[in-house]
Length: 322
Image (tube, rainbow, N blue to C red):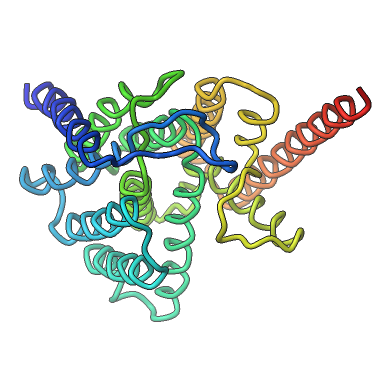
């Protein structure tokens, strides 16, 4: 019953937020780099840090993690309303990661591990935020990750937390997984969810000793990292907004439905995660298997991306000739 109550509470909170956002004009105006064409309420992802806060009150998660997520959410929400400089954003991320390290007792690990995990987590949070560009992609992908974590026996004690966060995704999805979204997650939603998923990923790896679970987030990771490399190759500023992720090419240049593209990303990740869980249960999830899987995913991604870019260039050439 408590989960049913939480679900309807989350929907109610979203509806209240929409009134506030509409009153204070917290909106997302489309520009030349946007993947949407109409003005939409921004910051509906505020439900994610609220869900973590409620989970903290219910005793599902430590207050260190709650403070970490609420901190980045607060700074991100301010940034959604009035853009901030890099310093307060980076500072909030650094402090939040320190709180995550404290919760996971990482400060007791070898000192050389800390900067590696810090860089990876900072990179993941920003990559997840950059990938939030079309209707449904963030919430569907996050939901798949949460469900995947829930199927691991090692995470049974964390099921109340995972269910709570999953319900917040369902509530947000009602208003976002649409042809014309009622709201976007905003930085407040994407960054807070990214930090939560990063925290849970590290926790799962520490509990199991299985680094292969990094592949639970490989679809996003591969698209984000290879897109950055591609932009560096073109001598572009990687910190500026752009439309060169594969999902953006599919949705913007080739005209596929946002929801269809989002379902592809979530569905492919779900298949990968199901395979990982199966391999772990039969004792076959070894490092060679993990690296082979990662290599195969990268090759498939590059092949698809090259085909998509070729089709886009062909269409542009055809239009120019006409």
